[in-house]
Amino acid sequence: MRARLADHVVWAALLTTSLAVAACGPGSSAPPALAYRVPDPANVQYDAADTLAIAINALGQTLTLDVGSTALYDVGFTRSGDGIRATLRVRDLQADVNVPMVGPMRVDEAIVQGDLVVEVSRRGDVTMLQSPQVEEAASAFFAGPSIAHSFFPGLPGTAASVGDTWVDTVSFSEDGNTGESTQRSITTYTLVGDTVVSGRSLVRVALTGTTEMRQTMSLQGAAIRQETDLEVQGHVLWDQQRGLLFERSTVSRGTGTVRAEAFPAPLPTRVEARSRVSLRAR
Image (cartoon, rainbow, N blue to C red; front, side, top):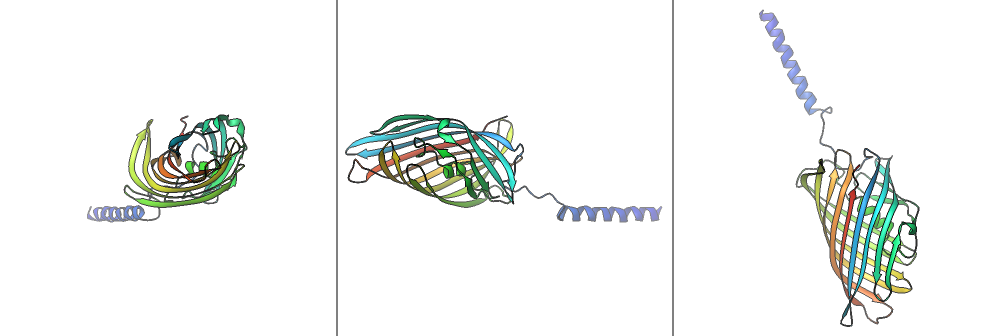
């Protein structure tokens, strides 16, 4: 009886030690990384809504340039190295543009031809592979790099806990049909915690930052040069289970100047922009 009892004690000790080693060793399940990967499902749809208001102080009068747009995107993902490749196609687009001294314009998805194709690293670094062809009427506000970065905010690429922060710097330039633009953004992200939306548990990340924009454009023959500095606030909702952006929402406010051929000196401006990209439920 004592021999059997001793055997049981030895086996119990060995089992306990093995379990402890397994719990601490490579076989343990580490917290999932907050990083881009091919999601499940790999083909999804996103709704996007944007508004832009630029108030221009011209000789004691206030002129306002307004842009409002809604769009539906088909987005497909495949693996590319350690990151992903994403193909975005505009399925539906409705945009209204009101330009001072020029008048209103309305455009739809017919003005966009082709796909937007990007490679995205685990951290959200975006490399442009292909941009769609955009007619002149929409090239001033439908810019491939800006769209791509709104779908792929910066992530740490590793596991993160509540209170962790990381900084993402994005710079790009683009030559369009009617002008060129440069943009530099510095964004600080902070992991706030979990939230539940439509029955899904999501990671909530707050964001704050600054954006510098320099743009030259021609709208229906009117040459415009704009310089703007913005303060940006918003949030990201990340579906950790599917490895997918659920929502990105931002509000940007700032000031700048605009130069137009009709005015000899730069005109002060106030700018407010709102942007929201959200996963369409299936």
